Length: 66
Image (cartoon, rainbow, N blue to C red; front, side, top):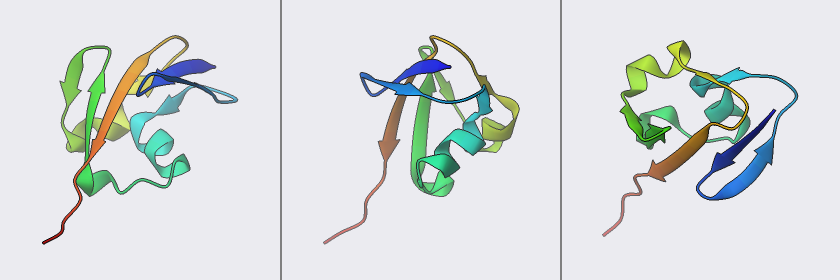
């Protein structure tokens, strides 16, 4: 399965939930905002959304600092 993440093409063996995809990319789900096919997804819905062939994702991670 191919999908676009932040403008780059990624290949996965099968369709994944957003939660599984973020885990495979080693991203903290509590610090991520996801736009899936032009729709903002709340983090409590990550396990309900199935990422499929040709889906487009934009991921933004909050980083603390001072």
